[in-house]
Image (cartoon, rainbow, N blue to C red; front, side, top):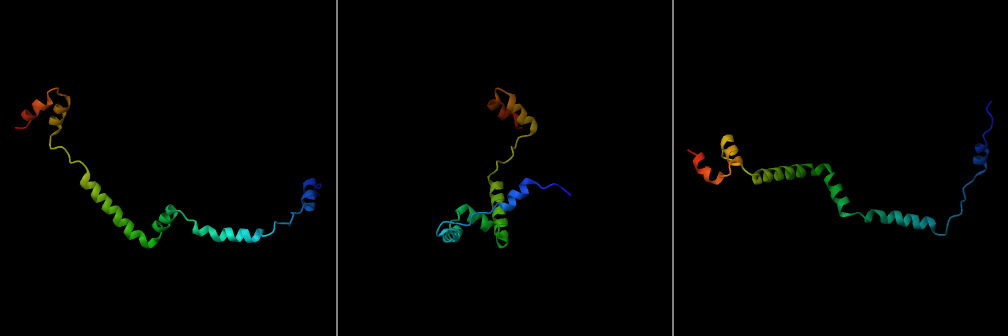
Length: 102
């Protein structure tokens, strides 16, 4: 048999005070009732994005953004690797540019 722990006797004697301020429960329920109406615009956007039925619209938007990004990217240089190298190191690059193209 184990010895009795003094903490066990203290916990058995302890009781939580049950006196609460007047109108406490009403105030708590009023606060809970007000909570949902105080939603930020970011929370509304997150809620909208997480709805499964909006997946198609989100996919179309991402595809459209990718298409526009592809149109706006700079085009590759028409120069060959040799020409680009010569133009990058030559102090007379502007003058040599005409000589590099046959």
